[in-house]
Length: 392
Ligand code: NAD
Ligand code: MG
Image (cartoon, rainbow, N blue to C red; front, side, top):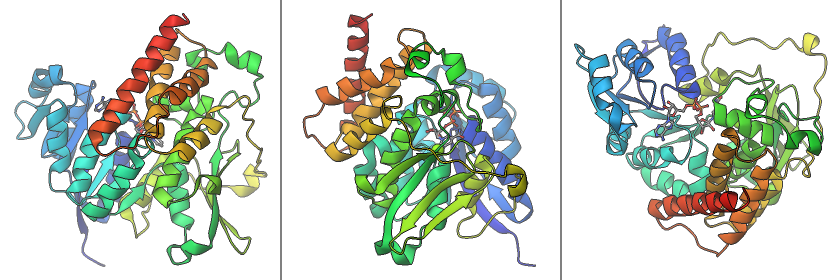
């Protein structure tokens, strides 16, 4: 037998859905790999963060919420774990020496710390798709400078990564992202106009964080993933297709110039994608459910209806316009999503708000720095907020 491997993994957003699944995968790989955790970060759930820090023997535990410093300190009293709070501590956590960083924060808040780890040359397991949606060009350039590997965690992109033949990149014609269609796949527009946040958060196949679950229902999640795919795999917008596949068994596909389509299949369990990203180029041994194809019996594929799911068209517009339109789409979407969650706007209003904000910010500007991205993000949120106030 070979000696156990030693690996250092830092986890940004350890207390979230991706973060908890990452720790679970690491626990299962514990037999073959000895893990060290240089740093972990969370935000509101201090109790869980402290528990994870003790369990992993983390070097540094950080809450993104500055006001919770003392809570974290008392939760970790008696341990030798260093503690920190606030944005600069998040950056410090990301910059600690590590082999791989799991980018598991939700939203654009993850951009600065993830880019800090990229600059240090760490391999990046990327769940935090907003980094690529809002700052794809900057992120790609920073990865090239930093020299680390970029390992997609989002299940669709992880699937594509698994079946993308690196030696035949010129022969890749298209990538086909699968989408479950969410809980409103068969709703009419009239029904969709009246849905509640609770019903939108109820994903049929995947168990995920609140925002990404509602984004799945509106297909804004798929819109973000189209832009994410463009940057991860260097695709032109017209090479990126979306197909509704209610069973969520085919996680995505790559189409080649000889007509072949390669797919990755599996049970809808994020631990497969996380395990692949962490273990690459090896394969992990994981206790996820095995597919029973006879029991499944069938796999369905349906063209997406863009009149009920306008988010997909918005992603294509954002890709064609380029520059800061991805940041505008994401920022406006965040503001609209918050307004939907708090009951101020309806489900279908989200796409209208995003479209109008994107048009208003369509001035051909690109991002020269991370500050440009954060500025475009907050401008998009402000414009969205004032639009929603006016129409309230
Ligand atoms: P989540 O809400 O469950 O967890 C988010 C994590 O980020 C938590 O640890 C939270 O404390 C932290 N966080 C939240 N706001 C923060 C802020 N302002 N500053 C710093 N930290 C903050 O989210 P999730 O579902 O785990 O998703 C994480 C990312 O992974 C998202 O970008 C999501 O789109 C992507 N993703 C998630 C899944 C999934 O299965 N959950 C699948 C694919 C992609
Ligand atoms: Mg996904």
